[in-house]
Length: 200
Ligand SMILES: CC(C)(COP(=O)(O)OP(=O)(O)OC[C@H]1O[C@@H](n2cnc3c(N)ncnc32)[C@H](O)[C@@H]1O)[C@@H](O)C(=O)NCCC(=O)NCCS
Ligand SMILES: Nc1ncnc2c1ncn2[C@@H]1O[C@H](COP(=O)(O)OP(=O)(O)OP(=O)(O)O)[C@@H](O)[C@H]1O
Image 1: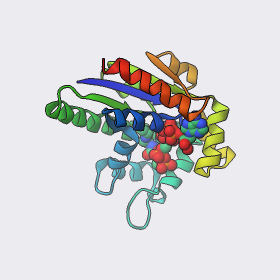
Image 2 (image 1 turned 120 degrees about the horizontal axis):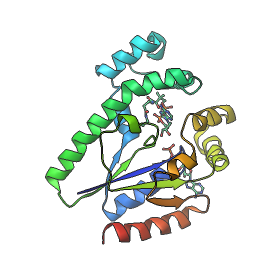
Image 3 (image 1 turned 45 degrees about the vertical axis):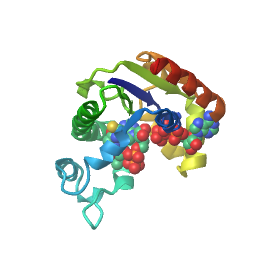
C-alpha cells in the first residue's frame, strides 16, 4: 500500500483532484471529514472544545456550532492553536486506523490522504507519506472562489486564507505540484498524468 498526502490551501482544488484520483481507483481519506467525526456529540474532543471555548460554541442540541467556533479561531491565532491541539491528534489517530484497515483489506491500495493542514499540523504527525502532492493556486484566486462559490465575505475568506501556511511553505514539502490557476480541464489532465505514474 502507498499513502500519498494531498494538500493545498483552502479552495486550491484538492477535492477536484481527489475525486478524479478516486475515479481512477485511489482510496481517498478526507481529513476534513475525520475532523468532523472526532467532534461529534459524545466524543472527548467536543467536551474539550466546550471546556476551552465555553458553551457558546455548542448548539442547543449539544452539537458543535461550527460558524461560532470558526468566527473565534480564524481571527485569533492563540485560540486556533488551542483548537488544533485538541483536534489534530484525534484526526491523525483516526486516519491511522483507517489506513491500517485499508491495508488489511487491500495491500495494493493507493491511498490518497486529503489533508489541508499537512504543513500546519506536521508537529502532531506520526506518519510517513510515500509522496506529497501540493495543489497550488494563487491567494487571490482562492479568495475569489471562496467568495463566489462558498458565500464567504471577503473578510472571512481573507481570515481563513491568512490562518494557513503560505504556498511557499507548502511547496517546500512537495514532491509533485499541481498548478490550479488555469482551467479545471487543465487540472484534470495533470491529475490523469500523475495517476499514470503513481499506478505504474
Ligand atoms: C473551526 C471549524 C469548526 C470551522 O468549521 P467549518 O465547517 O467552517 O469549516 P470546515 O471544517 O469544513 O473546514 C474547511 C476548511 O477550513 C480550513 N481550516 C479548518 N480548520 C482550520 C484550522 N484549524 N486552521 C487553518 N485552516 C483551517 C481548511 O482549509 C478546511 O479545509 C472547523 O474547521 C474545525 O473544527 N477545525 C479544526 C480541525 C481542523 O484542523 N480541521 C482541518 C483538517 S485536519
Ligand atoms: N481551475 C478552476 N477554475 C475555476 N474554479 C475552480 C477550479 N478548480 C476548482 N474550482 C472551484 O473552486 C472551488 C474549490 O475547489 P475544491 O473544492 O476542489 O478545492 P478544495 O481545495 O478541496 O477546497 P477546500 O479546501 O475548501 O475543501 C470549488 O467551488 C471548485 O468548483
